[in-house]
Amino acid sequence: MYRNLEECILDLEKNGQLIRITEEVDPELEMAAIHLKVYEEGGPAILFENVKGSKYKAVSNLFGTVERSQFMFRQTWDSVKNVIALRNDPMAALKNPFKHVRSGIAASKALPMKKSSLPSDFKEIFISDLPLIKHWPDDGGAFVTLPQVYSENPDKPGIMNSNLGMYRVQLSGNDYELNKEIGLHYQIHRGIAIHQHKANKKGEPLKVSIFIGGPPSHMLSAVMPLPEGLSELTFAGLLAGRRFRYSYEDGYCISHDADFVITGEIHPEETKPEGPFGDHLGYYSLTHPFPLMRVHKVYARDNAIWPFTVVGRPPQEDTSFGDLIHQLTGDAIKQEIPGVKEVHAVDAAGVHPLLFAIGSERYTPYQKVKQPAELLTIANRILGTGQVSLAKYLFITAEDGQPLDTHKEEEFLGYILERIDLHRDIHFQTNTTIDTLDYSGTGLNTGSKVVIAAYGDKRRELCTEVPDQIKNVSDIKNPRLVMPGIVAIEGPQFTSYAHAQEQLKIITDSLVAQGDIDSCPLFILCDDSEFLSETISNFLWVTFTRSNPSHDMYGKNSFYQNKHWACDNVIIDARIKPHHAPPLVLDPNVEKGIERFFDKDGKLKQDN
Picture (cartoon, rainbow, N blue to C red):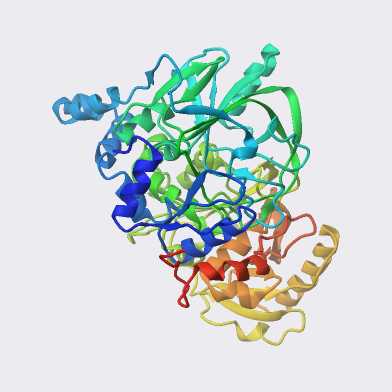
């Protein structure tokens, strides 16, 4: 397999999966715009050979398709899956030891390899020498979007007690002093945050190394949710088919396989404003104080290549990361949460806001009326587990003689809407944590969650067109069918939640006046019902990224019974609120400027 990023690039080019751009390209928005257009077309990886302002080449869209990603790991893929399966189910090795001998050998050969000194082709450079890529028009500066951020446990130093994560890094802009300071953005539950907390308690700075480039396996390892006891660096070696090579310089870990390494320290309680940044939900994450890293030294190997990606409204290249992770870890969540059959973080909704899940329902086998019971226990376990704990909406059910697939999103949601008891099946968690990048809540990291657990016999036939009784209601604007059982309606502008509540009372009262609308259990109040109803992807993105369950879910004939909220029809207010972050919009002048790189069919030209 590949010893470095250059070998991977040459292999992709040889197999017709990479195109070179030799013309000078501006890292200020142009490179990102080209990437987005190529990705949307399902195009090749792109090697930018002439980056304005830098002597280094850059590559993007390496992971642009799942097929290309699997191609890059074709020699080690099966052995890696076996090792992860073994970690998830160690009893399998005891039951059939000879079958798993090769997996054990593969894992032992993947252990990191310490070297005595820096590679001879590593040279010291400055941050200003790097390709400083700005991705979206309102970004605060240039960012590293495929970093491997390395830190060690201050209580147990050493590479086997380290964390390797993909946390975004701001290289320029804002108040950062170029070449001396950069910003790190990570969430409070991440491994590096735990290391920083321990360093803060000791009153000492945390040493951090940022690796950029190297074999693609190292990039993927930085985002993998690995089983307990399998380190990211061991996984990197396992997937690369070659041990991770490293040494220490001035007390900092240096990856010998990386193309670039940035070293520095995070001092206790030292922050600077970081952002804005066009993020994976399809909106900007705004400017907030995040840890400041004081740059110590920056290294680059001879002929180093800078890898990058662009995140935005899904699907984007990071969608492929999610698919790869699912294929590798597969049944891991089943091992962790008994009763879970499937959990799907819905990419079209930005991954974290929305989960679909299938569990088992064995608590009430003798009751005449089937209802969620075990499903609620499972739902609480899901919302307390790793990354999926960031979800705001969890729709969960159990199979009842009918096979279900959470990836068939319209079919799965329809199954739940046919069975939901709106007086019983909606369960809120308020004043809790949500994704740092989600601005639909009440503040940074704060918002609410709702579990919608439906199970049992079919209760209703879902409407397949807008119900007649609401077509001409004056307070119901531009109703459009999204899918069976869901209708989008448009709402007026508003200035506050108090104002929104007044508007929703008018709308819900109008619905009450229309009598029974049971065939349409869910209404979405939005800014543009035509856009929302145009595709299921639009519906999922708008509805679940622009709403906070506790504040934005209303109901026709809503009431409380023993502190449980219930209604006859649900209305989710998915309008853009005054406190929301702005959505990502491309610069039309840049879009016009990059047309020179594409043919009349929108394909990237071979000779640029």
